[in-house]
Length: 225
Length: 225
Image 1 (tube, rainbow over the protein chains, first blue to last red):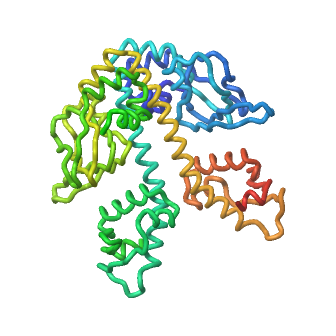
Image 2: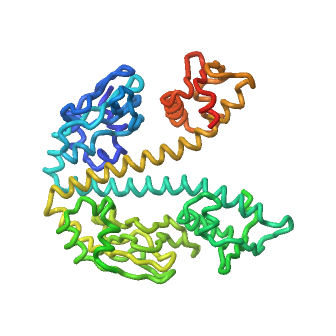
Image 3: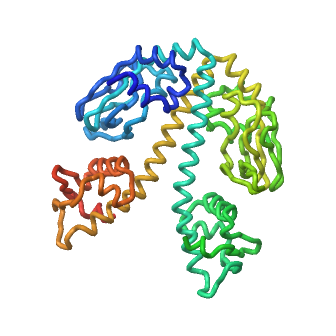
């Protein structure tokens, strides 16, 4: 695999994006690309840590072996993800689980001592990494909200549409016969999600939740969408 | 609001969890709790940054004012979230958007100069924060996978059930008349999500995707669940 290809794959990842060109180059000089066959072991639980990993191709399963001999999968990491980097920052000296390639895989094995040394020598880099991580956390949180609201939204909108009389038009005031808290329970969504969702619909000028439990439908057409 | 109550609210947040008791205490001494009425402005776009925020109660809307006078909401932050901390790490000197309380809200306003100074004086702290952020990123990514797979799973399982003949039993081999890539498109899910989902179902011993596009149903009962 050419260095340019690797650089293109890692450049948007939160652990690599804040590094400058020179830092990335020396990091790659302290890393290696390793191929794994399907079901090949990457590391064993309790093995000494010396690296963290970035998946260039394939997928990796993290798992424990239970006392009854069965395996318990903790997580499957896909192409473009890193794993074991939190251990590096925590200075854990052994891996807490086993890792195995789920399919033929290609990993970037990054020397974690080198990475940590780089951070300790460049205080600015640690702060830049924190900035990137916090941004990434916001992005992911937003995705989670979107995904959970999306599902809640279809249930809530469905409910409102069922309650509306056939001849209802824009501006119709619908009485909701229970407080928000109970409606959330009825729709099997969390009260905070319902509140967020109502704010979203109000923001989009589709409906308004008014006092005394009235919903004013502002755009029936967009409610039906 | 009592200090103990505030400490209890912030202790699991990734920006505060890695701080020791003494550091949290001095951070609170450099923070203030501020109440905002509904629709009260928290900061204006281009205002100089001096703090980041943690929502103790209420919710906050981040927005831009478009040239046509309309407001464009970037994001709504709920109780338990922080905002504007990435700006602090990036050393941005002004806020890039407006922030307004969506409802009566109580914020912990944290002096960002103090927080940054604390990090630069304790190199270990920056690394501990990175560890916590990376852990949090993994947790959130896992939630996103779960949420997107959940939805994809119901669509895929629905498809398989529709294709099965009425008299099919465990061990039935079903021919899928298109490659995985096209099936993913047909179900309107991403190919990677379909692959992850199939691995999940294989892992749970519900079905197996075999060569030449055959799906072997291992447990019809659990497929129907």
